[in-house]
Amino acid sequence: MKVQVAIIGAGPSGLILGQLLAKAGIDAIILEAHTGEYVLGRIRAGVLEQVCVDLLDEAGVGARMHAQGLPHHGIELLVEGKRHRIDLHGLTGGKQVMVYGQTELTRDLMDARKAAGLTTVYEAKEVAISGFDGDHPTVSYVKDGIRHDIHCDFIAGCDGFHGVCRASVPKDSIRLFERIYPFGWLGLLSDTPPVCDELIYAKHPRGFALCSMRSRTRSRYYLQVPLSDKVDDWSDQRFWDELRLRLDAEARQSLVTGPALEKSIAPLRSFVAEPMRFGRLFLAGDAAHIVPPTGAKGLNLAASDVRFLGHALIEYYGGSSHGIDRYSERALRRVWKAERFSWWMTNLLHVFPDTLPFEQRALEAELDYVLHSHAGRTTLAENYVGLPFEE
Ligand code: RFL
Ligand code: PHB
Image 1 (tube, rainbow, N blue to C red):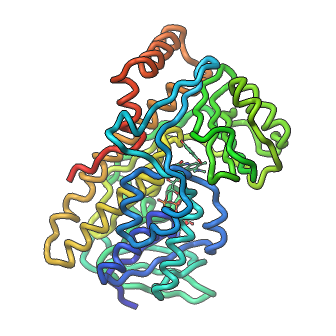
Image 2 (cartoon, rainbow, N blue to C red):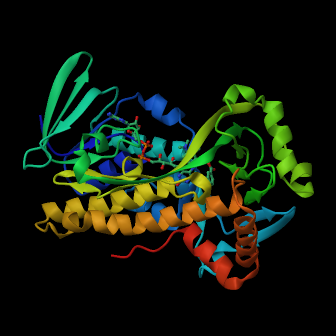
Image 3 (cartoon, rainbow, N blue to C red):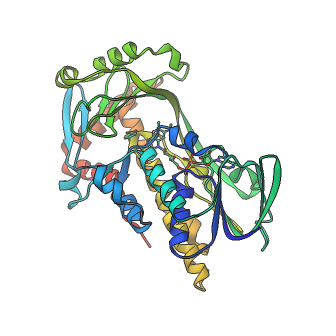
């Protein structure tokens, strides 16, 4: 089989790229290791930057998001029992974010792909890539016990942190940067109304907590927990009791609890692989970088990578290789800014087991500055809504 672009992974980055290429008439196939239901069952991101919303419109899949997503103009930081509103809209000249679950976005992309008759091979096993350092890359996979080979012009590695693409690059061609945090986030999804109209990021001596949502009737909450904790250690009741302890009196009062629809623990990590292009292989999204979820940047970065990559490939088939030659540099410039922001938000709002007294006071002063200085709040707001694209 021959296609122009072979995309590995049907997460948000692979699916958005597939949509952008299809709209431009470029022939692409997506290979996904799991079933569509499995991909949809992973509860992950919930906050989209304006540039991500714009990209989904460009890809032609924004209708349901605009109808059902919740535009947010601010977030609340809860520090020492007191709420501080960050007016995202006012501080950024009218920008906002959209609360719309990754699951819904993925479903919209899958539906659009199906409606257009585009090929996604689910449960593609033993995916292997080769020849990307030359002119004739090949992707092979096994489906229902039969091995298939795909000959293509380019491979897009959209296969997440544990994927095969980054792992196929020779060790001496890639540089990895990593920070592992000494805690995780325990997430709980419930069919209960959100505790507040806006997201609450809470710093508390017992650990960080986040009150988020998926809709007006569905909430998503997170608690900072030690890495040694297991989901089974946390009954629903224990989760709600601990969340209450980390909130303010008003939120404690209005919190509506209910049975968990999903509960999981995610470790926190910062990670970047450089470069993001190896000959005819491009990495995009979590395959190339991971951020701790505190800044809500992971999915947004995946979208911004494939915006650069999609436009670059369209340019290539239009006769110019300028975009693909600059892909890695352009993408990494934006990636590192989001990495910095996510690392900074994580340091500012979590309890670290080994913080020295001097660092502790310096962090408290920094948070005080962020909350009470116009410049500090503006910096947070500008990064949270998403930095503009530098072309
Ligand atoms: P994905 O979503 O991991 O998709 C990769 C896909 O590749 C498949 N795959 C393979 N397919 C074929 N062959 C192989 N060998 C393969 N190996 C893997 C996988 O099955 C999978 O379907 O990566 P992608 O597309 O780059 O998207 C990245 C985002 O999913 C991720 O960055 C976000 O979910 C991160 N994230 C958040 N991002 C935000 O922007 N805002 C948020 O509010 C936010 N909250 C979160 C998050 C991630 C979380 N977890 C659990 C990691 C909250 C959490 C709890
Ligand atoms: C979420 O709703 O899952 C969510 C929201 C904001 C974050 C992280 C996760 O910073």
